[in-house]
Length: 259
Image (cartoon, rainbow, N blue to C red; front, side, top):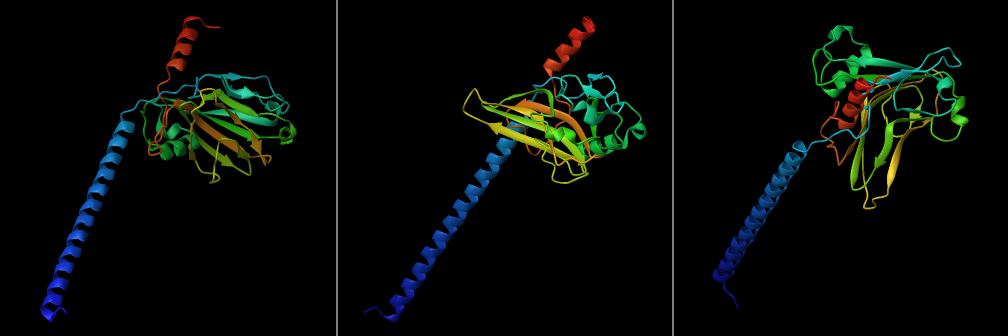
């Protein structure tokens, strides 16, 4: 039978072993945490050094065209390439709000100022990367909701989802309306839309159709920089006017061969 001295020694040795194990566990935890931190930094570095380009033409809404007067007498202006299903034009009033660099910051529309603040560019900034327009759509008549198929779609709405792609935009809705792809959860505030998608099937695609539901007369949608890019655009970054070789090429051709 063990005496008191042996028991005391056994307890002491057990305590040392327990402390050693706990120390090793703490050391392992610290190394795992350090490895996770290093990996996150590496991942962020990869994202920060990855270039993203806009795949869809006219994502800045600078190319526009005016339609004949609608049923309410409005000559609506739309971005070139935007889809407008039948009878929808008669139910809306559309306008373009300029967000142009170089302009006197105080002369900008109030919505342009609010969006620049939200994007982090700030309303008082006179010069920034590139100009763009905001599309303002006001509901005049809700009868279009009973008409099947899409209401509108963005320029170059086709998104190839393999291996991955991201749809992004800035949107603001005043009123009761909901609009597909524009998951605005705070009314009357600018919000960033980011929808990354991925698939192993090279034939899978989506269309960025803007379908209104629960609309009321007087509702307003503001939409800016609807952008499609390949890959996962980082959640931590807000997008501006991305490089768009397709847009630049079309605009250069149009300058050389005006209509």
